[in-house]
Length: 78
Image 1 (cartoon, rainbow, N blue to C red):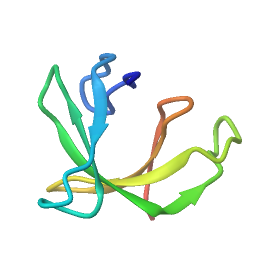
Image 2: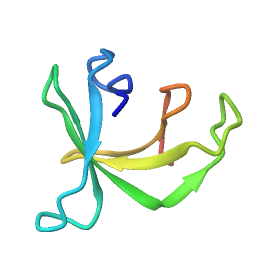
Image 3: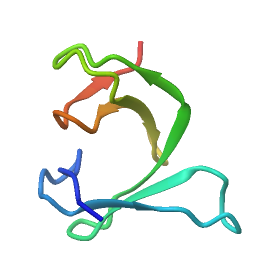
């Protein structure tokens, strides 16, 4: 599985897995900084920066934001 750029520490160590016993949502975690977020796959939209339909909502313990897996940008949810 290819990794992505972590939205917190900005290293190429952000990967995902599914654990249906823990949650029905996709779990994203960073192998470098141990950041964990849950993906809401039902919320997908075109990225405001790269214009690709690759932006989904990630939610951690503190915040929820849009994250683009194509250009690795984040956008606050207003």
